Length: 246
Image (cartoon, rainbow, N blue to C red; front, side):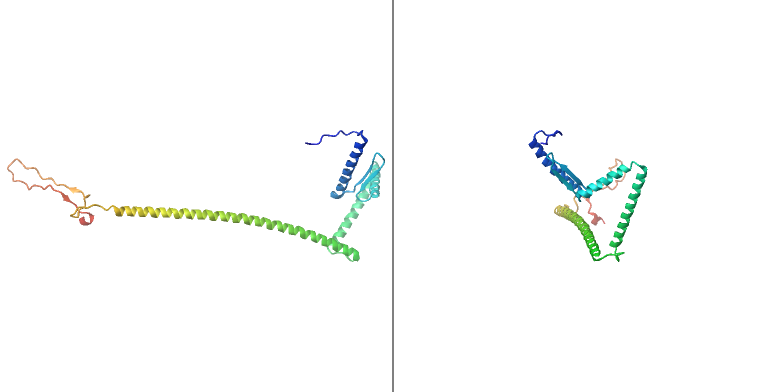
């Protein structure tokens, strides 16, 4: 269940007002500290309680924050005048040129150039910066290599699983082929046994009972006195098998 909304108005009860002030003051100081660390901001916070007690927080020092605030405030007030505005931008340009020159000099020193004007302390500080930078680069490189190795291992595991599945499918197909070959062999053996157990039947004189029968008709007897024609014999002539006819 969510918290109900609190009306933003003065708390009449002094005890509740003091408790609320203590809680929200601590939260405000915590947020100011987090803002200065996370965002690299210069933060200054001043709080006076109802009893006149002072609570403050400064990321650097309260004096420098106040001085910077007064300076920026005066510059903004002078911006109302065009001449002051030109002077302001000239000052900003000069400041930016100095910062650029400083950054270029630091870059050359980090590259190992223009080190003649540096003392032992400056060189030691520069060496520490380089070691910290090198350490950070190595950590980042090791992290990238570790991630790549992990990814390659995952791909290798996937490929291995695919190979195992393909090997199982191949074994299944070989098993099916073996069973089919066995069935074909059994069917062929059964057919040969049926042919061997059912030979063709023949009569004792060696003629095939299934051979065709040949019939011959004789000429009818004439009623006249013509000499009789030799009668054509009608008979049963069983034919031999193909080898005997050939």
